[in-house]
Length: 110
Length: 113
Image 1 (cartoon, helix red, strand yellow):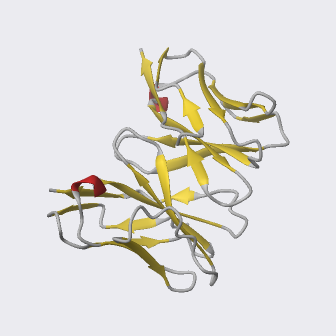
Image 2 (cartoon, chains in turn brown, purple):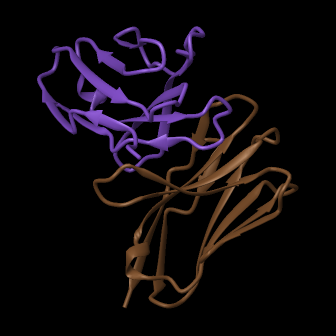
Image 3 (cartoon, one colour):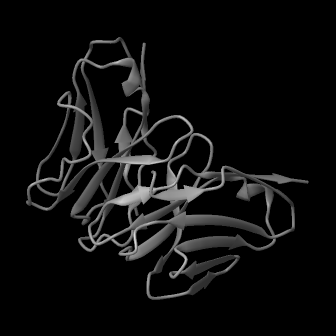
């Protein structure tokens, strides 16, 4: 969606950290999400963060939120080949609709 | 437990024909959403159902598109007189009433020839 922007591609070496960035425009966003989509599959909810938080960690995943700059990032530690996928950032404002970015294709190379 | 299921997984149809796509939400989820994903793009909101409230149809791209849901169960998305630009993956999601976590089905890939 035009309100959520992400870089389109990221290439990372196996074992390194991946950082996927996202910017959004709606200052009333209440939740921000990261979804993972593997080839031919539906979207898998990875994690989400409330807008009143600035960080959330879940195993290898760390989400950072800079509400002032409307910037969200997802860090994947110790990236594995199974992490190769398209990652979508999404925001939810005061209603229930999710606005999605176009997705970042992450390629993990050996 | 069972997740969101959708059928068919793939549908090829001729331009001008009608198609019906089905979504079975997670049991107990009162909210149901339909999204469309065009090749290489993010998801585009189509329609939202919440319990017995009137649905939000604001995302439907034209009057050829319609959707129904009976209570808190199955939903069907109908596209009449399909056009080639309707080719996409149609994704359904469901959530609890507060909607914090939307869980997606595997999608229906629609190809209009």
